[in-house]
Length: 212
Image (cartoon, helix red, strand yellow):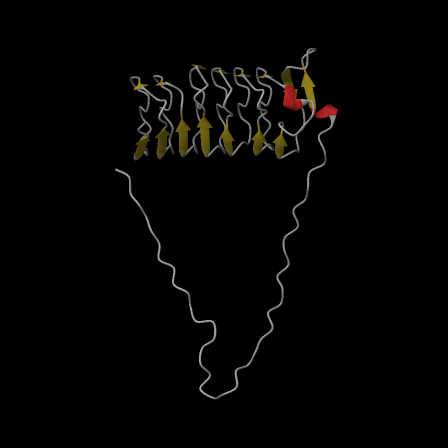
């Protein structure tokens, strides 16, 4: 079932009555905002591309935590993330994929430090083990355009809690053996769920099926 949780916020009195007595005014000291260290612009040494510039062969940086491929003049043209391209990139916590992306190859992000992924509409192929062993991954979203999805793409993602899924078929073993999976949202484009799709995902309590 779907539960609806509402909260009722009441506004406290800002100016309580003083009953004729003077009220001591305390001037609040402004709080210091924590400084967020901005990462330097992406350098050419941080990545390796195929000769035609369409495939990201290898991400080399071991310190960058965020990567926005869409805003980079060269990486925004990438159509394929290569085999094991981001393997063991444990410092990488966030990635924005380019809108040109069509393919994520085998094990592309295996053992990386990603915490959340939103794969853009336009992707068509996600190969086996693409995000396997991502121990920090908590949420993932897969678009309708992904028509070819390999096996075990989230294998051993032990902290994955929530998945939003739009491809037509939830294939067998798609979201099974996920120890922390609690919520799956199936969008309107989903038409069938194959056998064992959620097998042994023992904490799964909510599956939302969006109606057309």
